[in-house]
Length: 278
Ligand SMILES: O=C(O)CCC(=O)C(=O)O
Image 1 (cartoon, rainbow, N blue to C red):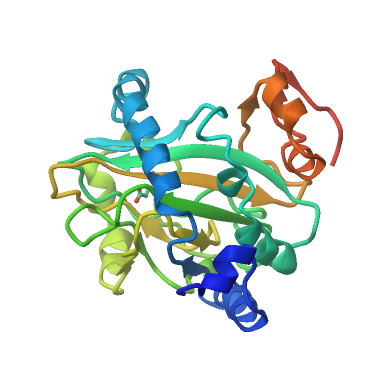
Image 2 (spheres, rainbow, N blue to C red; image 1 turned 135 degrees about the horizontal axis):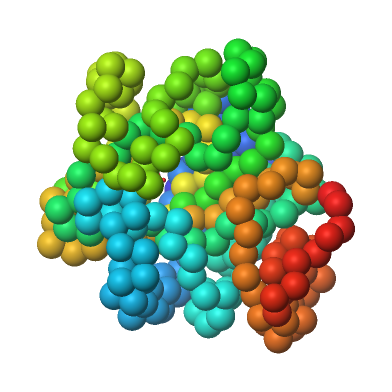
């Protein structure tokens, strides 16, 4: 979806675009909002990300398969502490409409396919709410992916299977298959089957927002270019759900406006985690 100048200036979708985005998210499992972040911002995020890349790679290794790092937390400090990244008003408006006003952000990290990365097995994020129950429950969490470079056919764009978030009773892959990064995980019967179902590569300009249901099947694809392909990943959900956690310094948290503090109220702040529930 391309946003017009007014929407970008007001950081709010038109009523028509809002309805379209909410419907696509519920029915298709995703919506792409193009070029929401201004170019200068994306450039600053991208250079800060590249400055950390080597250190992150040394820290986690290839934790999501050959030449691939996933779920690598980024420091919540400049430039990553930007409210347009952590609490994007356009995305949150849509999430709040489909879920509810009171949401929690519990995940801020990065996923990077380096040159030479391979296909991941198709997977969902998180565990099913009711394992083994062949029922599609309503959405309880949404994710945002922010490409820091253009996602092109040659640099390993994420593949997605629209509408697959509604299929609850197929086991795609063992839960630890992604972390083990074993090539055999892509060679199972079910993986061959889903590979034949026409996954779509998410081709989007840097600074776009991919809003998606974490249950929608997706996978990293081979990066055949000579540059890394980084994206930021965030998760927002009902306060009663647990997905991950973020770490913030008290100084950063205290300086935030109340709506940001509420969004991050279950974070670990200066080493302390809230016991409030929900
Ligand atoms: O980097 C990508 O394109 C997808 C990564 C992913 O889904 C994962 O590592 O869980």
